[in-house]
Length: 217
Image 1 (cartoon, helix red, strand yellow):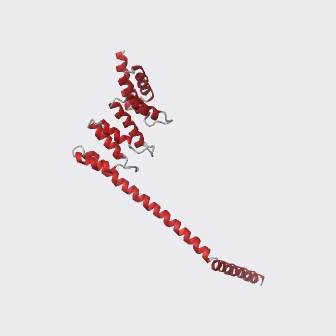
Image 2 (spheres, one colour):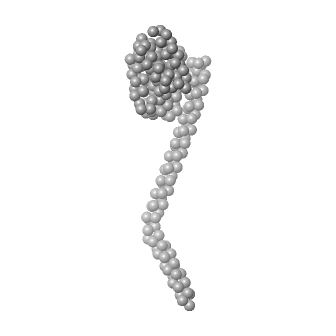
Image 3 (cartoon, helix red, strand yellow):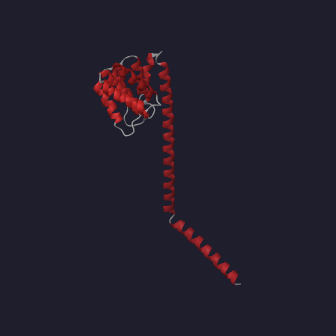
């Protein structure tokens, strides 16, 4: 008998709890509706952002593909240079167009045009492409015998705690010093590359430079 009473009490409490919950939802249905609507709107916004980002990435990939195609073909079709110029921009991948244009003008021995392309290379992303553009910029300045400006470019790059491809930068700086006739300073840098980067291409090249310059003494 007591067990039946306890069971009845539990059932009554459960029914009362359900009724209170229903009553709360009915009384607060406007708040509940607004909250649910807000969650739905946020979810839709997040979904839209993801779709937009996906679209941008897809678009950038198409641009990069076209840039690489033009880079291969424009030597035989110089008219395509204009199309490559039109693709250059500030996006993650379309910045590559500036590098390809600079490389093209360097091949054509038009270093002024190569310099112009590298001057306007976007500087908002400090990534691999950025550091490649700065290294190329230093090389273009060297080819025009603007040695002081070229050295300033390399000094700025090497001043960073983790310089990009330090062996390349030290080697290129040493080449500038060598062309200026600063052979002792050039030797110092070549020796550094030889000692610190023995297993790299520039480590090997630096060793050859050290041997050649020491024989000239």
